[in-house]
Length: 280
Image (cartoon, rainbow, N blue to C red; front, side, top):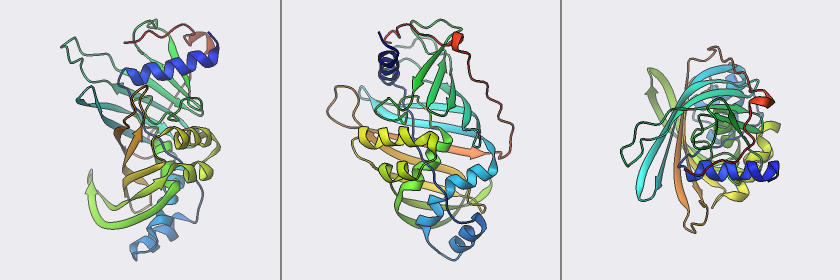
């Protein structure tokens, strides 16, 4: 089996296991202070949202919590993750917890995921993979661009999806985790987001724009006074394997503790599993 075939099989196996990931995208724009001031006066919501990814780059790093909800086999499941992300290096580390097996088996071990430009690394992936090995997925080769493959949203990708904002409405102020935020609701286009994205996210977003049931992504975004995303919720629609009916996935990313240390070490080549991934 070729390396590309192994990567494709890996992506399919993860989705088959009920793991889903969110996608996002980024581009440049005018200064954060100008954008926030304009927003406070009820200005252009589309322009503010398209710049949200840049405000995260300014922040440098943060802690993150993710959740992904989807219906599979007639049951709605939620996959949760928690970790840190370095926006400037495009590196993150998440501990992703899969839901307990419906048969009542022992709780599954968390999957450790490392997010990197063009790649997703997973440890404790499951059947057929040695405990000390990592599974690597080339995010530019999976049809969803790693938006629903890993079960957790890449925080920068989630922000970069907003670069493709087509329409948006400012809904007013609210609070998240004690922080006052501005609530926006709108629709983003993955194709447009891919064109405006940073180099690392361009190929995955292009794949998602082609692979999803629709390139339009409804979202709710909550930005603080510095224009940084505190919470974003995307609703994706994709075709899962042989099923003709699209699957709806809701992915939520919470960002907090900006500036927190985010040290991520990628695995060595010898630590990456090259064998067959067993179906679970």
